[in-house]
Length: 281
Image (cartoon, rainbow, N blue to C red; front, side, top):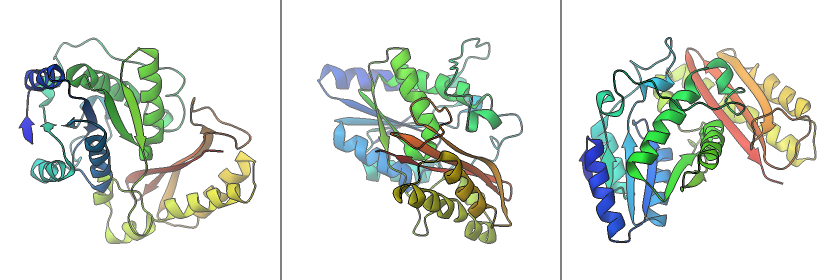
């Protein structure tokens, strides 16, 4: 595996691969990789001849009061995980490599970005869509891999690819969890030991909601209420949102149906965590 810093290096290598008839998978990340990221890279390596992993903390998707400066970084650790998982290139650019100082072009989306995380993080998805579009143009992958933990992001990227005619297959991959159910996240490192114990309330609450649906409940409001009540039993938890929406358009639903997404964002102390499940009927 090779670690590269420039767009030109990625393009030269990908061009050589494609000239040889090789398929390319892309796994976009912000680094500080964990088992969730590793599962994406392993799947990409299984389904493609070569894999590019981007390791870039993207400043344009962070709001002014968010954790850009403190976001965890460990390139040496990331490189080891990527190599073990089967990556061919680890692309680790500086901000100056990815963005011009006088840039005026961004990728915006209406609709899907208005609910859930888009409400409390209004510039977030503009930054996500812009950087992912750039990575698509740089790596020109056949397939790109995203985790379901960021379910709204997955839906947004799928819609962007459709709307802008990117010739790329978007592959959504399952949430990877700790033994106690907490979804793997780079931000879990922010949690104190007490907060880490409290954080399992997210998966416990979602489990209650999912079990209700499996028992035949079709009312979205009743599922939301059950999830909310469970989260509120944890003193360290503060709800940002609990929503039940259509996964395809991120619009609220009254009744549970095909492709229903139950998504939550909860502060445990000062750390904002997200989790979800999708019902496929």
